Length: 406
Ligand SMILES: Cc1cc2nc3c(=O)[nH]c(=O)nc-3n(C[C@H](O)[C@H](O)[C@H](O)COP(=O)(O)OP(=O)(O)OC[C@H]3O[C@@H](n4cnc5c(N)ncnc54)[C@H](O)[C@@H]3O)c2cc1C
Image (cartoon, rainbow, N blue to C red):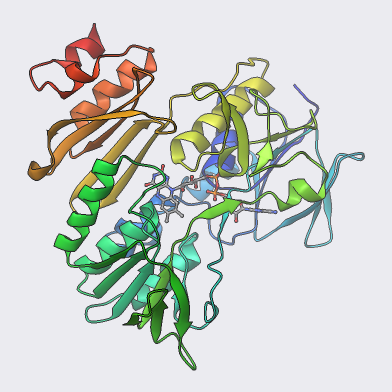
């Protein structure tokens, strides 16, 4: 174990998990957990789901109670930004002018909202959704009758759109490609396009945004095809980029995130990087990827803690993810990169089905809509490296649970 303290920059899902796992694994030294947000570290997924719908209040959001940090001797410092890393002196400079020495430094800085580069994007009434402040601002404004234009039909944009439609807004979604196009199968993407129409949204697919119009606030969104969409509220959900500025300025190798090896160590052995900010060699895919999911953040946090406690192992956790849109619960296990064959199990018309994606004949990913049983079986099948044929996957008589158990 490196000499104390362990300093963790970023108290999101990855950072908090690392601190907790270090204590669970028996680390007795000092842990400093730095957060540039004032809020007690919180869960992000509900921000576009239960919290936005008003089904959960701020008290439901914290990852851990305040007492946890005190009891576990985790020195959580809120509202403090790490500004600079002095690698030679092993110190982190903070924005309050102080600095902290580290034995090992863990970057868990997450991702930041990608900026939509069109005129009018800075007008009041244009929102993003990355943190609790964004969610509170949106929640205060989304109400029946409000005209909401969501730009970008990724997971978060579509979750917001489903919630907005449910709350009775006039919801419009604009997407330059197809819904969730980078991450899911064409069948699923098409299914969700239809589902959102049924939720009450208008969809403009395959068309970009050229400007947000308005004098004192956003009043309309102009599309690249010339259409003008009246808007009281615009939500830009055009993806995120890794928050790797601290690492870059410190001279650490970065490329679409902080580059780490299979053990999540950066180009400096005294510094690790985990979660949304880390670009790691993906054992399943055979190339470097960056994932934006709770599973990845939590499992990487656990893995780094174990390594620091003398139990190193390469990061190879099975990727999984979920998204709730209206009454549709989507669960994905595996990764869809380079999938060359998709088959459907069940009937999308019943609103409960799965798609199985194969890479060179081997099962790579399973997307399940309202079919938790398929997801659970697929997790076990992929988790132990088993496979099945596309014909078996598509055959309702083929027992995938038996395969998973066998
Ligand atoms: C609205 C929303 C809904 C989501 N829904 C899902 C879902 O349903 N399922 C799923 O799997 N994933 C979901 N995600 C993604 C998931 O939340 C992220 O993958 C996860 O939060 C990544 O954890 P992290 O710890 O790497 O980063 P984060 O949780 O982003 O935490 C990073 C923290 O570091 C702080 N920070 C950055 N730089 C500094 C600095 N220099 N000094 C101090 N602090 C700093 C940031 O402010 C932030 O608080 C969702 C994300 C959002 C925004």
